[in-house]
Length: 371
Image (cartoon, rainbow, N blue to C red):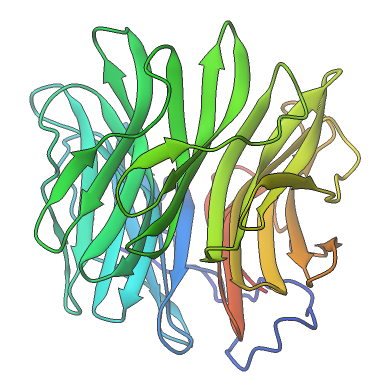
């Protein structure tokens, strides 16, 4: 996707939070591409005040990949690979440095298969990198990299034998992407929506398993040798889903999502203390529709979670931003420029944080919030 048209550079930023204390310039409105809908799904911070955001833009009946770069002063649309004739999505992005970054999603191949889309930034351009999957239906939802020689991408793939979508994990070893055993249940459906890695021997992946119409949380851990499932709290017996995960060390990680009880949605935040995952109290705005879609932490005393909430299905949506100060999670005020406002991803450094998503009062437009 090569073309780009800029929106007016109006400021869209959250109310200042003491924990940010950032010296970086507040983000402006990202440019939209073409007259169709634009969505941002993931964001990562690189050196200094720079950032990458990824998603998709709708051109007629086609979806094309969307990559935007923040150079510290302005967003600009970057050329990005579109191997699919009609469908190209980017869902997650991770940067090792200003010259080494990954973005993942999926595309519809000429042979009719939905395949993982993996693209790499080498400091000069984004290029497609092959995965080990060449047929079937597979989607990548998130990516995390701890070094130039170790990165993880997660999602789901359709298992013809089980007739179900099951957890998918790919690993980059510095040379190639290869599929790994996930450690997820072998039967039924399992999907992974978030991944984080702090080193070659410490990574987490989260999502959910579906059994008899019951959604239950799924947390997997990589110890340097294998992925295995780790027990996690499930406050609802019918619907508990995890959407994102972040870690700062082997003894501190956060996972976020949602759960439903009696038809009402609740924010879900869980913490790993090095021994076990426990549910941590988190603000839930009034209204049955609420979800946390992204989480990022820079230390044990600084973490952010983002998503949306609303009064009912199909009604107005407002952005949801929550902050951890080392003691408690609190709701932070955030911008809502449209009728529908959703934050899908967040990234954090010790002195800089930001989130992306989309807003709409008609046609969806990209949204960036500096925290």
